[in-house]
Length: 258
Image 1 (cartoon, rainbow, N blue to C red):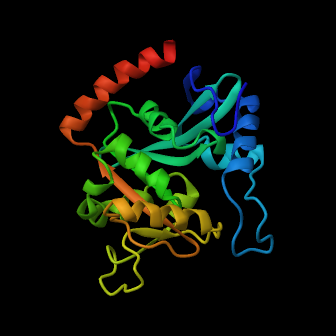
Image 2 (cartoon, one colour; image 1 turned 90 degrees about the vertical axis):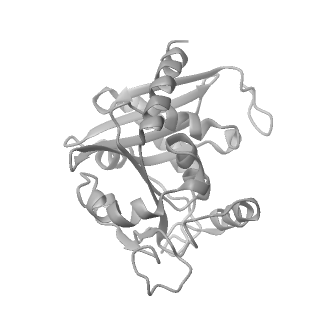
């Protein structure tokens, strides 16, 4: 298996599982991927050390028994190259699909894997998609997979619905997140537009570098990123997007069976 700057991308296998189908071995591999590729602590007693999860924490936080959860992964050759966890719940008669974790191995980034993982997560019954992330790349991937790109993010929809949607979440860290930014407080003048305060003090050096690069070519709508904060993105499925999702589902079925 070739890795590094030019890995062999010809043998990609995408798989999707319901939460109850995720085995301990799968979680062990997912934990290793997270611990080696997610990020490092910023403001913490272990500043500079890698953010780490144990296998039991991963199951408890991302695959709780009281929630409908999904897991998707991509292997390239025999290596786990990326994965995503999601949780679904009903709010106001609508199905919310919330991406709770999205990680791509550092050797396989900028190759479209994140977007494809999120596309595989999609279901035709989904009405709303959401994600909280400190990394612009995750938001860009979600906006492309679930909407029409970051430039058309529906800030009005986020303003009107973010609070009640996250309050209904069965995932504790989502439910407890505090809305921050000009979108929710017109008096906010710190440059934040759509964020949540999670007190998750991961180091923002690399995300801020990525944000600066994104802003050189795109109109970034979510504002600045502060310590302990994550960007908040919420997207409503429109009818034409649902038709696109149905077509994508047929394509993904071929992907998963190949």
